[in-house]
Image 1: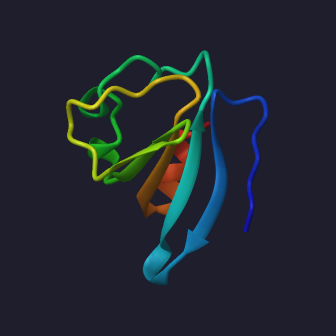
Image 2: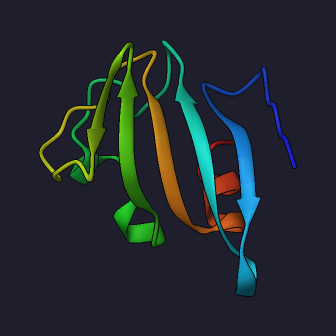
Length: 91
């Protein structure tokens, strides 16, 4: 399933559903996203049960980034968690 939300600053680009409503999504961080400039621990993902598996930044992939990793505009976040929470976080 592919979801695009052009009016949102975080957009769910792709969603791969797994069992029990969990899945993996690739999220783009747009320029005006609240998450841009924050560390992963300050984004609120953990509180929603969302694990960031990787940050794609240009040609670089940060696998299993630490909580102190900074999220930048233009990054793609590969996330795992409840699909409803991931989609809610991007709205």
